[in-house]
Image (cartoon, rainbow, N blue to C red; front, side):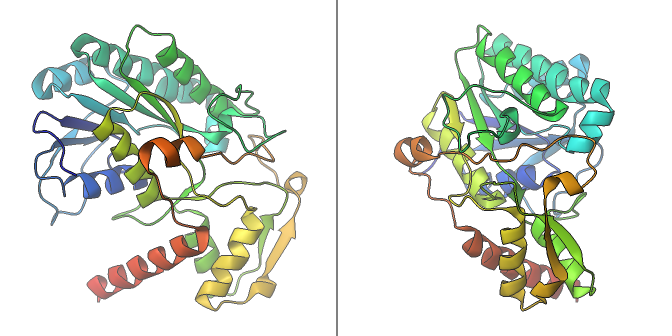
Amino acid sequence: MNMPTNYRILITGANGLLGQKLVRQLIRHADCEILATGKGRSRLPSVWSGFRYMEMDHTSPKAIGEIFRQFQPTTVIHAGAMTQVDDCEVNQAECYKQNVEATSLILKACQSIDAHLIFVSTDFIFGGEDGPYTEEATGNPVNYYGSSKLLAEKAIMNSSLSKWSIVRTVLVYGISHDMSRSNLILWVKSSLEAGKTIQVVDDQFRSPTLAEDLADGIIKIAMVKAYGIFNVSGPDRITPYQMAVLTAKYFGLDQSCIVNVPSSSLEHKGKRPLKTGLIIDKAIRELDFRPKSFTEGIGILAKQLKLAHSYKN
């Protein structure tokens, strides 16, 4: 399916894992004009073509205004955010600036040109008492990161903008070029390969999401102009400990080095909700969203790691 020629898609947070997957998938659409934005230099592969990159501080009204005037996007995928839960808890003022104020600025810019805003949110807007959650569930966050994302959601829903979509997702994993941070699978793999014993919680439930699947769901929303709230995550609902064991099994690593522990035994600045996960029936029905299982996702990631290693050598 090709996008109409009048689709000009601006991506914030393009240097991150999700941002890179969005750019990679969108450049396959020849009729789509893409502007990738992020803080600092581009960390996207230099061999990629079919898009432009511009540095943009999404907390700066001036920077946002200039880029919106120049590019005139029809669709804005706002993936830029402060997402480290503990950092958000410790640096609440910065978290509010990055996640709430920045979203309000992007929202205002979208309103000025009637652009479709697609906002990436999280399962952490929920308290974790009665997951998995539908799109209609009421938010009740237990940490500041979740609170900031819920505030941003409410700002969008209460605005005069009619063309908005909120995409809630869970525990995104994968690899990207010049990664600035790791994720659970890579951490488990590297730790076990180094012979380390790791502690992983077994009382939290999540729906781990392959980054490519999340990007695919977001692009489907952009293509069909699907407005409203959508849960876009993996189909499984498992604990981090189960994820670690499946990762060890796949790579043939020592499972005995994985110790399951309760959440209460770990010292976190920001509390984690215990039982989240998302019900994705709406995305399956309305977007034909078909996410990979966690085991399938590990296989895809393993192939990408092998390919990346071959490039380095």
